[in-house]
Length: 338
Ligand code: AHM
Ligand code: MG
Image (cartoon, rainbow, N blue to C red; front, top):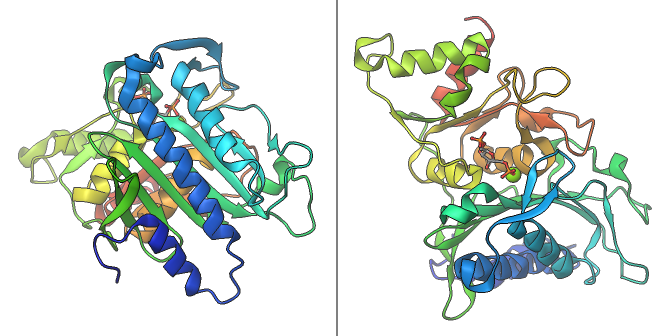
């Protein structure tokens, strides 16, 4: 247990001491990511004052409109990581292909995938957004990793986290030994430990799903939501509450704070070539699944554990159902036809 008030920098150094073979590179990488998140936090909080709202006038590889802050956050993240000798390559939701380090930049042995500003459609309406990241080991002996080197299941993640830019900026981190939260003290410029060993309550009466997609859902998800909506008169015998922020970071943060279930299920609308989910495996689903599982929750597609999926493509999309154990297991059981 750490003292509440420990800085993220101290925390990372202490964690490094637990690993006798540690070279300090992982510590350095986490510090670089922290720096990027502080910069993005500063920009999001200034908003229109520094002209970062609105559309960039471009689309990303998935054909989604890019916001100015999508591109700025992506640049900030790359700039904070590319020259410090901790990473071998990076991949981002906002870039079509693997980002290779500039010639002459020292090579590290980590691969980082990230969504620089998740939920960015919320930027213009001043609602929470966040950065999500995942860290993998680069295969040994590879100098310039390709997309194939990133195709590792989520169980291989060394660490994952997100930074939520809401009323406070909060960094949530797991290195595979529980989940800890650090709140940014803007006066001293440090993330400070404010919650440790976070646990998601196994039961919940709160669900999050975009019901405008209802007609596209598969039967098990329709059944689950329909039963929740029937409240105490229905088969569940209790009333449920609903939330939808349209910012996965904010939804996961709420679930880590008070429990809940989040669904962006397989639907007929999101797959250009057949049904799939909306959210991306490498930048959103895997890091959030590691965090949720490390906090005692469950994360699934309805058919399999997300962390077990062997990725086929950098920008692969998957259905995501995660959160409080007993509710997510119920949705899983409906998919099995129980
Ligand atoms: P983004 O990475 O382009 O911001 O998309 C991901 C976001 C999630 O944060 C959120 O859960 C979802 O998209 C909301 O989708 P919708 O607008 O369909 O409700
Ligand atoms: Mg996203």
